[in-house]
Image 1 (cartoon, rainbow, N blue to C red):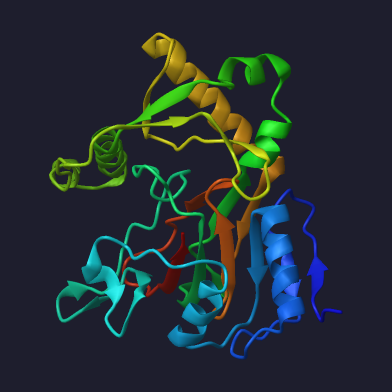
Image 2 (spheres, rainbow, N blue to C red):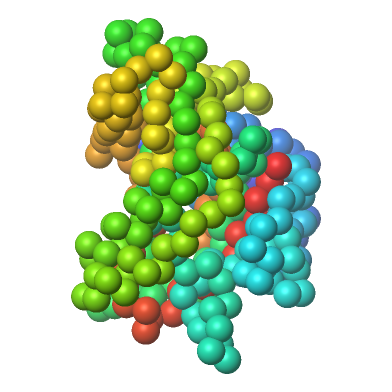
Length: 289
């Protein structure tokens, strides 16, 4: 028997999971139900959690060992398994990662074995005229594959794509320049990386659920095996449009205390940058292997 109830939202992912207090040790039956829902939906939302960094780590470690963010200066000093996602500046230095994925992406696609997923806990949220800003959107890559037309399934099955960190840096710099007042200054923020290109299948089979999921990220793919460049880019655009169509996207409007879990195999996510740097936003993220 479990105390958990579910509040669906009419989308393929992102239901609210009610009846949990992560400040306490979660009973085994409740945790087993959380695991089941996480596997089924890929994104789940746990509201109103007044928890410490230690509580977040304890709960996260019940899923898997944790992965530390490689830019260690943005990890919480007292708990380095937590990445700080924030625009806050203290003593002239950013306390966290300020650009929290403002495009459709899956985390750490530039690695051989991207981590299973992440948990993000809201500590400070910008608010204007009574509404929180800085929403995060989620789209199910599992649902996208299931609903892909048969001809596209045949086209993508068995094909790999080349993902490029350097190209993505260029792409992000160009996007930033488009939105900046000083476009030349925005472009100067780009720097080359030492991260090599990497190949991933366009369709990955989820290692836990066995579901097939599309594997794409916006502004990251530079080629698809066996296809001319223009044809490959057109395919990637079509896949991204299919994954992120409006009826399949869950948009989370954050409140302090919200905790959202997502699965990197079965979803993409995108942060909305609709608030000025003068408005504080601070989130704590753990990543499960």
